[in-house]
Image (cartoon, rainbow over all chains, first blue to last red; front, side):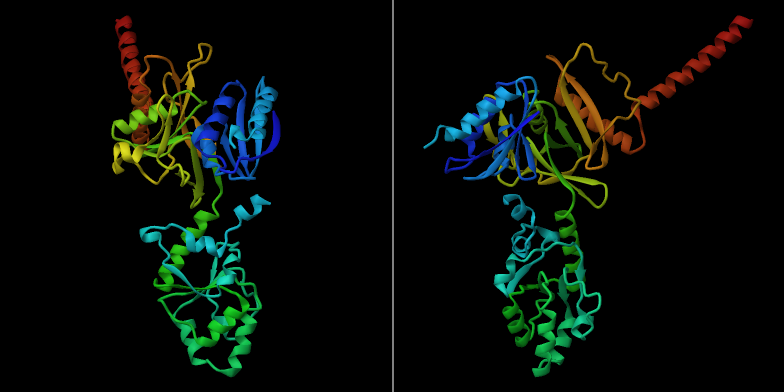
Length: 88
Length: 328
């Protein structure tokens, strides 16, 4: 299991489009992906779950992956956060 | 940091709670607004009669202080110069807030002192005992152990069924079928569970996405608009967990159902049914049947055990007859 901290850098926060992009990316891997906002933990492969986190601009999130391709999964997800979900 | 502020429950949060019908607290703030950021950290309440009389030993100042008709009458009777000092002593404690029931108005000096101490004064139209009952219920729910799980919560024949399973196994699609068959959706994907009154698991959805579902190929749909208000519910006790998984050739699935398997959620054992999925299996009907079966069990009637008892009875008579015939 690997963990990594990321921060939301796009101004609009985690709305439907970034959430869909994140879920799409996470679903490409066999590893289980979880995202934590404080004590709240949701499945990274579920759109409604990811939106439920209510992650706004500058919210720190913890990405957790568990499975054979966990490192690749986190790399891909981190890249999304760095590129601000291709927004702005 | 963000975590800490989120988990603290402030007086302001209490005022902003969206409570309905017999949970409504009917609170308004009448003084001490800057103090609304004070934290409520305990679930208990206190009637500060003794403290108003000047006795401060074991003063439970961390609690919400409730002023009913008695306390308020005492305040009015003793209003005057000397008393202001006593009141200031009361507010040297970091009281989270004071609540006046019956829409009672505190004395001007009480208002002034609390305003100076920045201690919020709230007013409710409810009676003291009714308010006490409601606030205890509300606070115990707020401070209840909680957990968010991945799954879909539906009410099927009155049983709260939590459908769980890996992503893409068909939880939402099964729930959609169930809704179409007249059952109700509570939450999809992320279910917030609180353990209240000891062993009751109350499931709700997140406010912002409540009663929406994500269906592969359709995107996000609004269940209330599509199926009507009869197809939704705000919260429901979780009474059965159905775990969907892709059919595993090597795994043994329960073929009889005479043994009870349970899953532990926040320390409560909830009946668990594991349903393997493969093309041609009608999952919604299986879930419906599991819910019916659960209702039967609650009434003390176990299909599988009952069936087995019949088989045993029959075997007994058959074998005895055989022995009898052989002997002849």
